[in-house]
Image: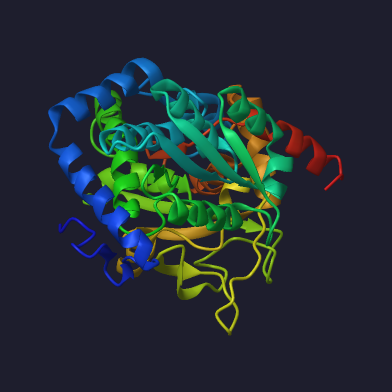
Length: 398
């Protein structure tokens, strides 16, 4: 199977590099530095050392016995990215890119964040490596994720509240890109998902692919063979790409990405790019599937989970949709909240609201599958950050 993207950064007809001329040179610099780092044993050794002794990899692949018994049918396994240092998969990419910034001589890093986990991961990596750090975050997301805002500040990061637009992830990316255009010589932009101009979708996928490699080895050790189904939530799509990539060549394994169905159909009520009427377009430097109106204007989105509240999706996901290798579905806010409680009550694990979307879909499918079937859910993060928001939503305050 051909490895994508091609040299121009395209996954089929999706991806590419659509940026102002001032960003072409820094993107080329990143591309060269990344390909050099992939061949550099010292770089790989340093990253592996940090992933092992700092992040806590490999994370466990856990058989959720009580959840499986409650659901009936297939056995449900959880890839425990929630046990990573900082509480989510985001640290895998943030550390990789922070090390790359050091290789390029950049002593300042910037990032965008929605749910706050990528911001926390970037602030963490910056503190570890002695880098100056600024994080852009929508004002609405700062309200929903106040704990993560404080965590970033605690590690010395400057947090910039973005008050324009919907005050969520899209708007934070806009501001981060403006900063980068102004400060390209001193600054590396640690983009947090499989989004943006080439080489970011490829690079972030590769840094997150450790998830899938570990999962495949762990499952073979426990069960042998391959799982029947792998499920992951999809906002920008980094945690899903991280686990799916290992299984894409194994076509007997079903792969399902779960988008945010929000409050239901209709403009401004969801963040479902595939099921919600998205269309081809260009956003944040890449050609992808975008929720937009008939005039090409990006429409507002909604999800109870800040990390899924984004109008576009990584270009490789669109290519996987086109080829039929991955199917995409939606889970609404109510179903995600039910799954949030279900996992906590059956396994004593509080999932991030993003991950709860994947749990909810697995819970729909498991009862109809054979007892010897196996579902792996990528539990991309833990739910400490979401407790206040869940309490408010369920208490009728928002």
